[in-house]
Image 1 (cartoon, rainbow, N blue to C red):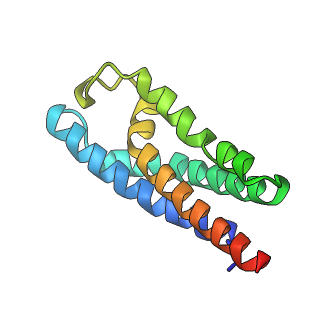
Image 2: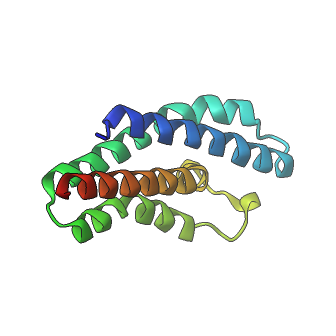
Length: 131
């Protein structure tokens, strides 16, 4: 089964939108001037670009790199970058300092879930191709 860039992008985008909604709702309960509908509107475009770049990176790694170990390491790059943004967070959701930290909070789990789906599909396709 071939993995398409559009499939990975849409899975990640849908999961990120859910993450933005949940994070926005949590932050909105703690900060009176934060509206999670506005957060959903504002962060939908960066979420789409982030999910598209993640899909391009994963499929580029799948097509250009021959060894599975290096594919897995390259596929972890977006999760590691988002984790780096989370380390700049002061410790709780009430202390979000900027948009990069908010998008990191709402995107790290969806990007990692997409990464796990990608690993499963390309390892499954490698096994069926070798048989």
